[in-house]
Image (cartoon, rainbow, N blue to C red):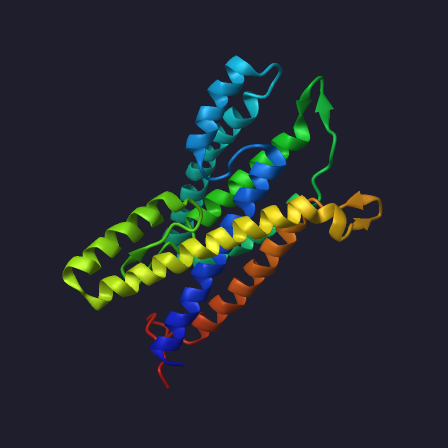
Length: 251
């Protein structure tokens, strides 16, 4: 397999991850009323709910922020151990981990309340945040381009900077990078739009009940799992075409 084909597979992987990021960010906002990846919004929500909303509303974004920090430390710890032990490819491991998290999310029990505190929402926040941190640290670098498949602020900044640089220097490499960032941002946006569209009209589309358990609301995670399995297959294709030294087989 030629280098160009391998590069194209990597592009598909990045597109899929950005799409998944958009799906789950919109799902988290629609389902739990907060962001999974953009903790700036959750930080604002903490103080807004603290002074303007009665009950435990301020606790949910606060828990999300705390879990975000703890999950970063957990994922970095796992990544360090895996890389140092050299037993398994981290990107491959992280996709397996996200698939496991996604399957667990599908079976979250509903209506677990203590007084007014919603434990179902707490579990949802934990799993969404954990999934998001793993995704944030998976396949973030390719061809001198730093991708963030979840938070688009940096990607938009890089897109704008590259456009300005290309207009002044007319270097093709800058245009290539610009196009790469643009594709990732559009993939994220498509994920957001699809997620909101499905969640807004799910009651008119279909209902998934198995043994009395309603999977309709969590169908977004089913879509995410499908794309994760696709990325798993793409990574296997890449690994099959690498030598033991990590160099590409071009036969």
